[in-house]
Length: 164
Length: 189
Image (cartoon, rainbow over all chains, first blue to last red; front, top):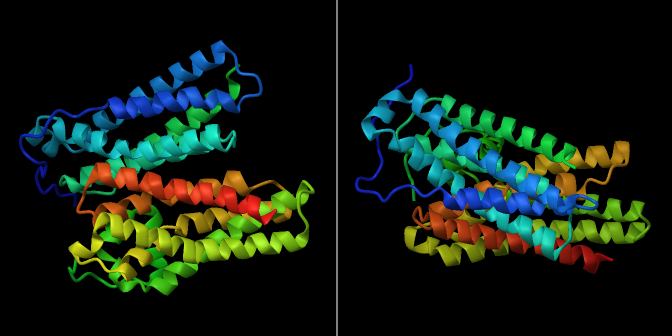
């Protein structure tokens, strides 16, 4: 039987900042077209917008699903626990973003998408781990972020593939 | 260090768990995994990863078979001595000793994180040998990237849950590994 042990978040914490996460998505959006043979302005613009949309979807869907699947914790924390977990967990996109930049700009590997895919999978899984650290229990807290990450990264890869 | 008594799991199970739930493994299972076992995992991962690099270069006519063997041996060195040195660096910078984490624990935890890399390396070598694909970047680099999450949790555990610090140090460790691979690949030629 599932059991919630109560909200374990620290009191009086500063508001959750999501801009570093969106910045990571935006950087991926700029880097991805470099892997294309002759990227134009339209490609960069589309890629940037696509990455931003994926980022917005990832953050907001995760918050929504984690809140709705942990109703007790959500009520205790005023909906903050999922925001805090996603805000902290998804910060783990940063190493992947920096390494993707290094690989593309310094080493010229033309392989940004594997970095983006690993980044979104790791970040979402870490958000799930953060939720459990805050007192949530149940395998769903691992499965939901992983499923969201898989769907979004697959969709992202397909859309990048058909991008002009 | 977490010393809560837990049900002992077989090593292979802990190795698989490191891919799925590294936070939990790092927190409660690593004291039972000896560092030579973990270094065997990381050593094998990098040996296969570097072998794929060599095979890719062999196919494009850049190198001969003797250089492929040399690169593969470099992979073994990289996956054992290299990973141990990076773990040592992370342990020292995180001041793991002050939180009663030993160097052995750090090496073991860091090296076992490469279990996902081993899975990717095994898949890559199968595709490389059977279908003749170039797999070093697609499988090898992807595998190394999947090891970043366990590394992050190891650093976070050693540094007393400092998120920003663990992100910065993970980036540094990842950059050393990837740049080192790129440089050793060139040296191998």
